Each structure stands twice: as C-alpha cells, then as structure tokens.
Image (cartoon, rainbow, N blue to C red; front, top):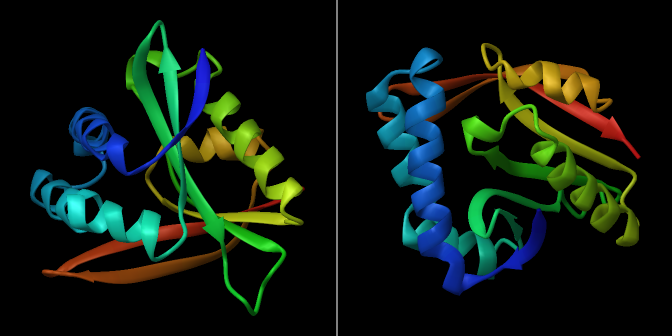
Length: 165
C-alpha cells in the first residue's frame, strides 16, 4: 500500500474512483438521482480543479497492489479557526473496507495536519453512513448535526464529527 500526493493530472483517476465507489456504496443511503447530482457537483473536472487550485484542498491517492484504490482531501478550515482542518473526502473501494486502507489514509492526513500546526480535524458524515463507526473508532466525536441544502431539492443530513490531535 502506498499513499501519494495527487494533483491536477490525477483528476481523471479521482473522478473514476468516485463514480465507482459512490455507485457501489451510497445507493443504500441516498437516491441514485442524488448520487449523480452530488458527483457532478463535487467531482466534475471543473469542481476538482477549483478545489485543488483555488480552495487549497490537498488530495491524496491510495495505491493498493499497484492500482489507485482510494482518495482523500483536506484543507485548513478557515482563517478564523487556524488550528482546525477539514476532511473533505475519504473514500476507499468497498472491497478494501476493513483492511486498514482508510486508517492509513487518515493517519497520513493527521500527520500532515499536525505538521501544519493543526490541532483538530472536522468532517461531515451522513447520519445513515456506516462509516460513522469507523470515524468513532479513530477517535472522532460528534460535535453537532446539520442539514445542508445542496440544491436541486437535495439535502445532506449530516453529523459534524471532530478529532482532536
């Protein structure tokens, strides 16, 4: 297993992985229509380019057995909260769940955040997502709940979880 920095040239890989993972994992949580909408909203070439170049999201690729098998992204939360970082994405192919890949990606992110002076990492997770168990095992605690209107009559009904480093 290897974890490498991802850049603009890796956008096609991230897009392919996101479609594969989301279409396999999320139909039990949200509708296929919402999945397609969110993939376009967050994973179009333009959206990913903006995240990498303008918003300052750092992307990582997980390579397992020589093949891209997961990805993650994170950034500093805000100027107002300089010691809090935001985990935007953490996805691993479902076939690799339970094999330590997500833990390795998260560990790499924690090390990067700590090296930048970060003290906390926050994330949003759908209230029906089984990944909540993973995040709790990794030390995240529930800070709040939020319902976010993402447009097109779709909503994200999430917990905000926080990990203290």
